[in-house]
Image (cartoon, rainbow, N blue to C red; front, top):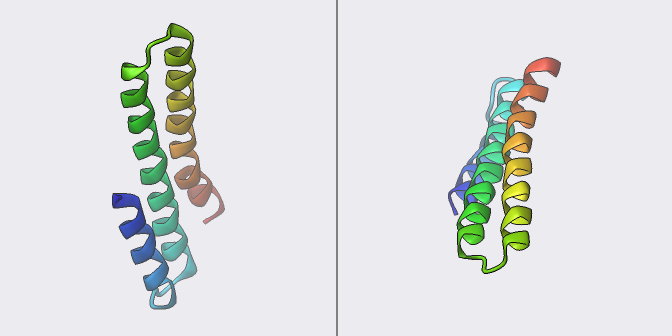
Length: 80
């Protein structure tokens, strides 16, 4: 998964970053990418779902992950 590589990269660079804010920003972006990937997977699963209720539930979860993907970067910007 692309997320795992970017998360590991952010963690490895944590000790070498000039400021903690930069490291936190990279970690937040990695989390954001992960949530977006999950949303894409849930939408793909929803397309394969047989029952409309299951499709709706999966699409709703995907929307929540999309919203969650926006949060970590915004929180870093506010507190940084």
